[in-house]
Length: 152
Length: 216
Image (tube, rainbow over all chains, first blue to last red):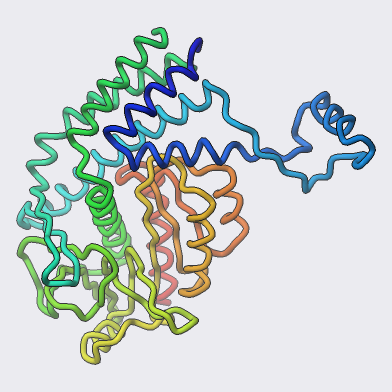
């Protein structure tokens, strides 16, 4: 896609404001680059690297590894895929927990707290979060799926 | 769809996600709790008769999940206990510490443990020993692949607890680096585990087999 690098930068900036921990995960993955076995590079690229080695290396070994930076399209695809993963995971976790308590005729209220009695506890109504949030998450998922199709 | 249209659409989706997102810690807690239900499902499929417990008694109140590393003997947390034909029993816990090979206690996000060991731990106020752990899940609620640093940490944990018992679980696709690092070792990596998705079923089947092996 044209201007995919620009689209990625705009979206990662937005994520830094709204979902900073998710932005950090994506940026860390982008920074790590793609692991590529050097022997799998195109022949021309391999020969070019050997030529650039000025006699210090005459061949590429099967153990040689490089990290290739992601292209603009790759970064954008990685970001969109990550957001789609997030929407799926959020929706599925909620639905799974709601189903679990419903099947056992348990209270829909889930309590999360630490061992420390003084620590704050978080209470979540499993039924309410599915009812209130699933349509929003599903809609987000559809928008992200369409965006991913647009860059393929 | 051009780049501007894509950005607009995705910003809209980000807005929807951010209004629903409960924060990194809470979303991780929800994910780990959902994975606990996978471990419970594996226990049932292996033939276990599962009961939810609290403080040694059958429990039907609001489920109380432990967040962060905790002590198995701490009161007032929900766990699952399963009995099998032949008398074997196990428990499934969230966020308890287990004594590793080095003599140091490590948190296991989801731990499946011999029930007799759990009774002993509650009686003595000690952490469960790694020899009595049947399976341990390390959950990472990451939208993008965890980095190789997470892989290194997980391999360290698996050395402490026992390689074949440990599973690294996350909802994202695994990077080639992470997948390659773990593939050649005993512990297993389960990427793309979203509850209800095929990868979650593979994880549940794997846990079921661990339990069946323990029963044999």
